[in-house]
View 1 (cartoon, helix red, strand yellow):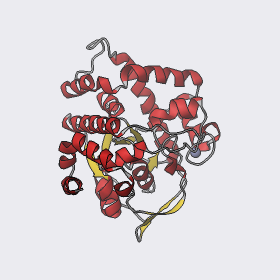
View 2 (view 1 turned 180 degrees about the vertical axis):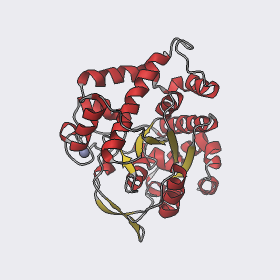
View 3 (view 1 turned 30 degrees about the vertical axis):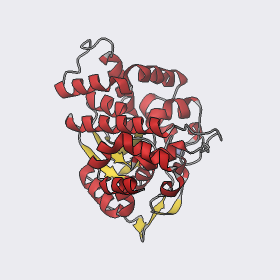
View 4 (view 1 turned 60 degrees about the horizontal axis):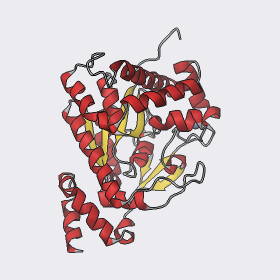
Length: 324
Ligand SMILES: [Zn+2]
């Protein structure tokens, strides 16, 4: 490539899945100047290799947006590159690597060979590919800001360590609601196969790990803004106004009115089925778990996560749980 696209500012949505990240990405994606990209971490396997549908409902290989991004960033998508990214991910982008990534970040010492089992050469190659993708996507969408809703704290650490201009939005939801969502059987619209389901204990462990990792990232000097799912649905305009101010964009929220949002087509590469939704949606909290989740599940999740629940302002919810 003779000319490089201008650097995109990256908004990374972090947190455990089923916490409202897809909804937040769709809402942010309606703000002028912001391009939502979906869960880019899964783009290599699900989009490039498996050719699953983009949020516009075209297969990835036929989506005009992603065709242009691939051409602009890499001279076209390739199976070889996707497999290389999966290999690199297995080596550098892992939750168990976070303590070392945090130390690298804190000491600003991402020097090749400093930690031989991580391999910063591989980390640099891995992140350089993301950087090219983000920059090309921003350029093709004509947006200064792109949103990656990959969620995994480990990828946010990788980006930050390698110097990407990233602003992390830490999305939190009541863990009892998250656990109920992960326990349900849901089919993937892409192929009809069941989505991953976890026990309440396993969800609690993942909820703690992801949230504590993002707390660590915030303490490492990376800009992190916390958003609670419940606050987003309670006061969407205020929440988005606060977020756009933090991102540095004007709060143009004309798509919000009377408790509804109007969603347009988004070229999100992977993620929750809500990425296909177009048109008006009612912004209401999904509190079905309060009656549908067995009380033993709610008590177990509360017992495992209560210190962080209190930190995130779920104290009143916790008291309600104790009275049950
Ligand atoms: Zn598309």
